[in-house]
Length: 615
Image (cartoon, rainbow, N blue to C red):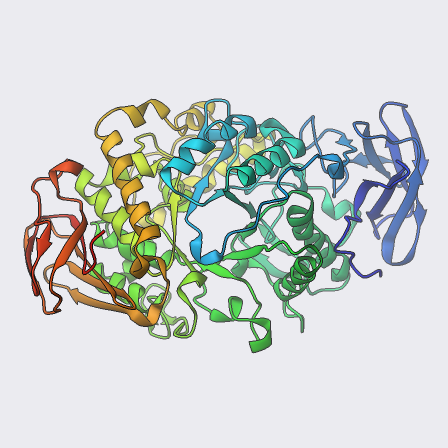
């Protein structure tokens, strides 16, 4: 088996310097492979080689042409490494030259990870049109907001035109209804020229159900492990080498051919691999090789619920080498602090006590007993810097996986929304916003799909109903197959000019500006963080420091005013922001300056930030 070439994509159909199509297919399960040229209505056999690799160099296939692979002279399927599926997951693959795009982002340099302020979005519901081109029109808004990176939910081709993206069945193919490969390349190019980084969500733990014909070609799955989606992807069983290469090639393609700055890797805890070299380590090694060759930096971001630092520790220290990870535990603690019922997986969290621990230790469970899991859980993350953790008050999962998909704006007060925003943006970690939260979007973000297989559609409906049994929720979940469910989840852009949404947007902008400008907030030194938790009062006092600058953040999660005294001394303390101020449509103004000891009555559900240096 050839070593992976980080310079060029090898799988599927690619075009050489002479304009010929170089065709490579892994199909060890069949005796004969032919490529069927749709335009010419004829087939041509591929040459079989070692370990089930089939190859052909052809003058007959040009960019834009449609093709299938015919197996054993009987059935034909799209290319597992297809770059374009213009007629959906059941249609023909389209030969595409992804190297022909004319990039103009030569001056772009990926920003340092510590400077990332993520904005997670779903292409289909972010705009009325639901396309990359329409998203481009909103980039100036995002730049004005102050975020530094957009994080796009998965775009791998899925069945139909409505899906979160986690049912993608062609990992190399960009969803045609969004604008396909060229549309994504154009979006990334524009983002870079405007100074925005781009993170793409990818799914390497399963392949979607409809249009999934991988098993007809090769041993892509293994019965050794079971996942929520069925048999696991084969990363360590017989025939796994080519499967591993498939996903390594996919990673490299996004970075090299689409100029993506970072990949958010979905649920890496569901990737099953007991190889001596874990697939995530091997991906990281190849990404490092690509970085060495191109000089462009790229990040790997894990979604992970194992509280296991092995995933984010360097390979040199026995880790998998991923750059950073989401920590849902911060979210769970924050939601319970805001009054969310302690049901389901929230049952393990004690509101402000858990939140204070997350500010200090990142993981809430770092070796202690978890009642929900009925076991000790997690490990300590003491030596991992703040930039290795991504925190948020909402995301696609935590919103859309509620039965009705309610956003924070439907669950808590206007004052509490501001408090949650502040709690995330002053954390010593990387903050992430979920689209629309910055102005208090009121539409839900619900779970939607558009499967064409009736049995599959019904199975999804039943699955959604069963999912909420642990939360003891009454009523019916919206129909995931209904177009109405999808349309109800679109952002209402007219709200940003209406109150109180306009004020909320201004509040978020101010918080983001403060995070960037105040060194004590911007520098992610966890060793200069101190946290005091006043559990009975439901108050957290978070202090952060950098050199001579000192900030004190007081968060009152209770519905009552709370007296606080902070025995820290400085000639004068200057207010940076207070969510309770009249300017932010709060109930009262807090003092602009305080001399020496801070003594305040914090209004209910309020976020207050002072600094010993004037803004």
